[in-house]
Length: 198
Image (tube, rainbow, N blue to C red; front, side, top):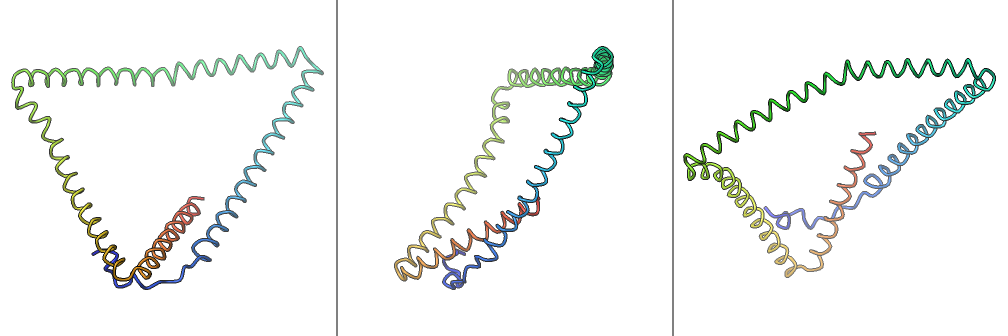
């Protein structure tokens, strides 16, 4: 049934701007403001801590350059050794496993391609027909769905023109009011979804 044949189409309901637009937008703005303020505070804290650590390290290096440099060198060597061990113990086995899996899959694909080629070589018409059949089925289904959709759209447009000829002013007001109410509902749902994610 077309929306234009619905008896409630001409019942113009008042738009609830306060609850559909203003309150959700205000709530979203408040939530985003709180989160941005918290993010700013965290970034500020991290930068202040980093600056304090850097200042302490600079003072330490200035007071005892040889000892501090030796300590930093030892820390760098330890970190490099840990990273080297992690790369060779963790990442290389993973990469090797992925490489072996890729070789196995490539071999299987090559075997399947050879089988398909042999089937095509032995029975070309049957192979082509089997390959085209899913595409044909999908195309037929898409055409059926498009036909139903276009028939319903065509019917709705005819209903709208019929109403426009009978009651032009009321129809335009109803279309405007219903479209605006629909957009307000979409906006409200979008803002509500964003608030639920935050």
